[in-house]
Length: 270
Image (cartoon, rainbow, N blue to C red; front, side, top):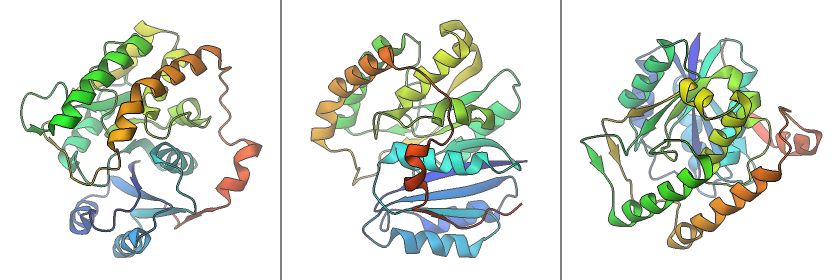
């Protein structure tokens, strides 16, 4: 049984470390890489195809024809991988490798060795050393952390870390419905999981926030100043909408079928 890693990509032609991804997938038979090209306008898709061609049995590329945001890209990858019976765990990480493979595999090891857990996620806030973060992100991470705590009511220090891994059976729970936000979907993930498991105590027993040993902010981030300033308002919108949302666990709705026809995949080897 494999662990599949979703890597959402938007205009990553100049940032993606092709050699690092190829070296990792060549070194292991326990992992499968699932790149999701989120309607990139540069040559990202060609770069991803080259990685896939170097290891066709271990790499999938999903090409979304329209740019829809990280939330939609991760969701497309999760729903695709959910249909693969040889995938036990599904996770995602950033294309710029701000969280490296060593930390990700450590998260996966924790999940594999603790039957009680359903999700393990990285935490930059808990890491004691090796973390580099620019002042802009440091300030807004504190603002986000405060707002998220008010919304979730869970003692999580870093919901927004881009490295998470979870059991495949959570896909209908977390990814059944479209996310309200393109970038703050991590918060929605925890809201959905909390609702599904029945409250704070149950969800905290099923998840684990694991300190990262390394995290480096890579320049040319897709999150601009305008986006950052709007984050508190977007979080409030999430809080309001989830207070009135009727939860369902439909994996693929009829309304979204047209979008799915625009997703092209290379086959995942058995």
